[in-house]
Each structure stands twice: as C-alpha cells, then as structure tokens.
Image (cartoon, rainbow, N blue to C red; front, side):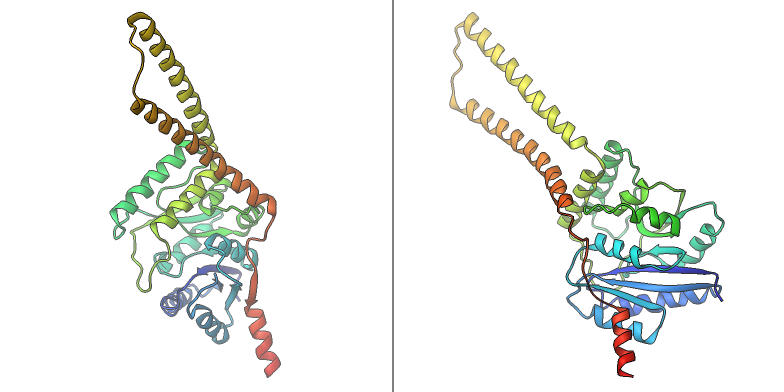
Length: 321
C-alpha cells in the first residue's frame, strides 16, 4: 500500500479536446511511481463544452478520479482554491490540462520533496518559444515591474505547476482573500521552494482561454494585490504637477512684469487643462482600482459555488444499483 498520496488539481475550462490526452499522459506517469497513491481532482470552472461530461466519464471508470463542478465560471484562481480545499493528499500538485506543464517532471519533483529539504518543488520555463513576441515582451516587463515595486518575489517564467507539502497548502488556504493572485500567494507564504526548469511547450489541442486583455487585467490584479506603489506614484504625479503649475505661474508673472509680454493664446490653455485633467483621471483611476478591491473584500462573497461533485455522481449510481 502506498505511504504517500499525491493529489493533482487540474482546473478546467472548455478542455474537452485535451482531457482524454491529459488523462492518458498522467496515467502513464503514475504507473512509473508504483509506491505512490494518486488522486486526480478535476475542477470544472463552468465550462460550456463537454468538459464536465468527459470528467464524469473518467470518474466512473477510475475511482482515483474526482471532480468539482462550479455553478458558473468563477475563474482559475477560484478553481485552484477549491481544489486545494478538497485535496486529500499529503502532497498536492497543481497543473493545467493543456500539457504545457510536463507531467514527466512529477517523478523528479516527488523525489526532491521527499528528501524533506524542500516544501515546494515549482517549475519555470527557460524560454517563451511559441508565444507571440508582444505577449512575451509584456510578460517580461510585468515581472520586472512587480519585482521592483513589491516585497514579494515572483519568479519570471514560474508556472502554477508545483508540488507542495500539506503544511504549505494549509498556509495558502489560510489566505482567504477574494482577490487572489496565486503566483504571489505561493511566494508570500514563504517555505523553501526549488524550481525545475523546462523548455516551453505549446498546447497540443484546443485553444487557450487567455487573451492578451485577460492577461493584462490579471497582471494589474497582481500588482494591486502585492504592492501599494501605484498609490505612491499617484501622489508623486499630483505633487509634481502642482509644483509645475506653481513654477509656470511664477515664470509667466515675471515675464509679464519685466517684459510686458502678457500670456495669450487659447491653445496653450487647452493643452494645460487637458493635461491636468488627464493626470487627475489617472490618479483617480489608481485610487478607484484599490477601492474596488477593498469593496469586493468587504462583501465577503464566496470564491466559488459548487453545483455538483463526484460524490453526488457516485451516490446516484449506488442508488440506481
């Protein structure tokens, strides 16, 4: 009988094409680790295709397959949190179903975490081959920016794919904030983490649900969640523009008194008004972003709502029998 149980959490959103391929791949890897028990916990994040149907079928044919299904799409962060809450293993792994997280790394990850030297074995890409150049450029700039303005280090290229001890997972679950940025949370809780590097892999089938705009909003959430530097920037901009206005007023007053050259022209006036108005809106937008996050936290809404789980399906089958 296996001494260790590894729970693998797989968030799924419209992954009907990838699930059979993923299950075949992960099953083959588990057979290479006969001394370890596995449970595969699929989290259906309100998929609109046959993802739930496929997951149910896998659950019926394999007792190691479990699933959680949301009442609607709550986002990957909610799916990760739900999976961590319901995982039973003493080691918990998180990975995507698109096989961009290589399951072949699992044996090495397990071997390292079993030494007791590490609390988490993470993975990171050494390149971004296959990604659009613009997306890669902005991703690199995001990591540079957030590591510069935040006290929490977020490793460039790090994936959500990681194997964690139960102790670390319990620490992550203690962070119940509504606005979640898991990459930052995994770093914030601390613990000793080692990263395994791998070359970027492209999705085998299906289409990614992450658009450029979606990633941009996600990066903004990460910055707001782990740094208050934008608030300082807004204050700096406000003070700088005020100081500039004072200096300009002094300059124009001296020029008029000394040279008798009265300031004229509506063009300069319009430019100044539009410039000041734009800066004010920018600062208000930054303040509004933080205020909106605070507003959502005070509502205390649940991160997700479950519609059904594998327990419901198995209970229904047993009642029919």
